[in-house]
Length: 346
Image (cartoon, rainbow, N blue to C red; front, top):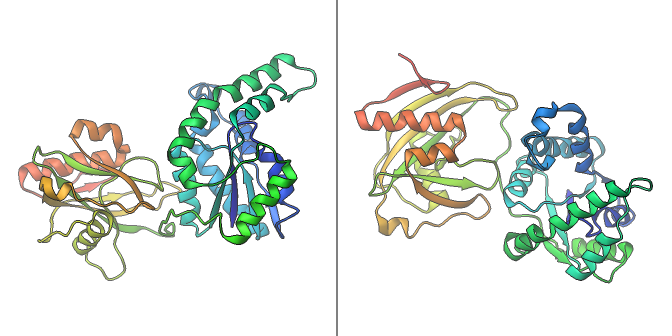
């Protein structure tokens, strides 16, 4: 299990995490900030200059998941992770990756009053002999108060168990967190995800269109980028049947007829992915009345929209966009295309 201690900068995460180690048997501290520091020494300066925060680096988010999973495999027990996460898509990606490894996450938010938070920031001293460095650290913390308040008023307070530590010491705050864990008040996060594959997979996607011929895309909680409705074909299941099943499970849409095949694409392995066969089917036009009744499983999908091909290019990862592009050409021509790595062959 992982206890993720969230909160904006100077909320007291690290101090509380250290106190928790004495209250939770067989627990270990993992600080993802150290992973970020390591990347600053390993990535080319040009790449680092492209981002303002190491959290914006996909490699950091991937390494956080991999390191946490490796630590738990090595030491077992409970991992206590003090780390600010204010962007929902980053939280979804990291927690989704952990869920894929069947690692339970309890999300706790430390939320002191803003006045007290600002007082803590004003007194923050990171360096004993670098006044300018201390001022930069304080300004960084001040700059993140507004993004924190925005997240708190939106997804963050709904997602995490909130502990107001305005007038609590780190030890008392840790006791409150430990009590919430023990009573179940801090519940496991709801993100669900199938286990990561250990070999090539077969997956089916279904393209649904509106009356303006725009295609429906969905926004998964457990990985970056938008996607088509669909998923992995289960053992012994025909690909078209898998597509119909996934559309029903993800959107609540029951297709009356079997969808027609548009493309088969062989996706090459790109570590850490294993690749495999990808089918895209034509699910036809979704009437406006049916679109109004779409229901998403909150643990897997957080949004959907109809988009043009040009808009899809901005939302889909390149490999999925190429698959969509050729599927739309196949639909226009009334044919089926065989792709290898997104390129027609034969």
